[in-house]
Length: 175
Length: 250
Image 1 (cartoon, rainbow over the protein chains, first blue to last red):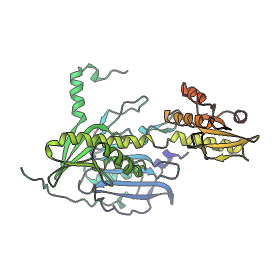
Image 2 (cartoon, helix red, strand yellow):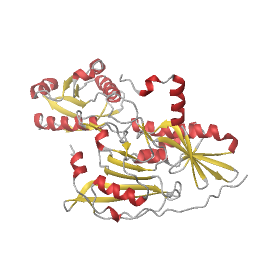
Image 3 (cartoon, helix red, strand yellow):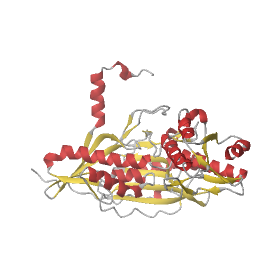
Image 4 (spheres, rainbow over the protein chains, first blue to last red):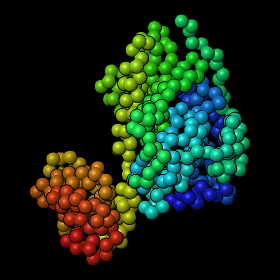
């Protein structure tokens, strides 16, 4: 079994930052997937993924640490940070749910500890269903990036560039 | 249940609070977004995007269902599942999103329909995801069988039942010239149903194999054990001794 928690606590480096992708024409979503190295060795499946919408500047950015998919195994998110996300976050009431509030703000952390069942040694859901507030104020992308580096223990997080957001005027027709 | 501050509120206040939490609108450039009272598996709200298109407005999920599937590596399931859901609801789908172009006065109904479709697509795909527990039991079982039956183990074969349907199995071993199927089964109903149906079909073969379901904890399975045994399967626990595995195969 993969030792998920040790992957979280170990110091990491981005092995190579590929840059943000071109936006998808259908949704304007852009992303990157960066391999990580621990102790000088590039980990086989552990990556940092970022996502944003080019037409929605200064909001709706996600950084996630996950194990990539391999035959017979799903992709496995370990932790995710949502910054000013649309859709907010609601923690569902379930038996044996972790201690977290029913609703958190649009900037929140899908923490490993909330989503890992230490008794059954498995995740509580496929996609980190529980999240908590982030206590630090993340006013800018640079704040978010610095927090991500600290939380995910990635020392060269500054390699991640600011998304190539398009700042558009409001072109809604006047009625 | 532990009493909370809200216990003292009347249902009217609780309902009003819930409604305020359930829906909200925000605006970005020429587009608007509405958080709907439906949740994706990660706890985020199903969100709808409104934007002007020629002759009307486009109501879409902006690819959020696709993103929810991508988060667990299941994005390849989007196109087929979304096409099926959207077709039934008379909505459109492209590579990433579910949408409909309509006159603005029909926005409310379209918002509901696109949101429901977006939610349904993720629910359907998530229900089919390979279960981690399933993989764990299967891996453990194959290791045990390789030690107990080193010369006759066939890993993960497909076997045709009486119906001629091919069943994916965890393992088959041969003891004294007779085949025994070992099938890893989790406590989830889907896993039990799949194993039971497969066992019934295999048991109807002219020369049926012995059928053994391997579970983690028989007590946890409760009445589901009955389904497996009714289907002709013996049930053992994964941690039982080699003797038990050998007896089950004879």
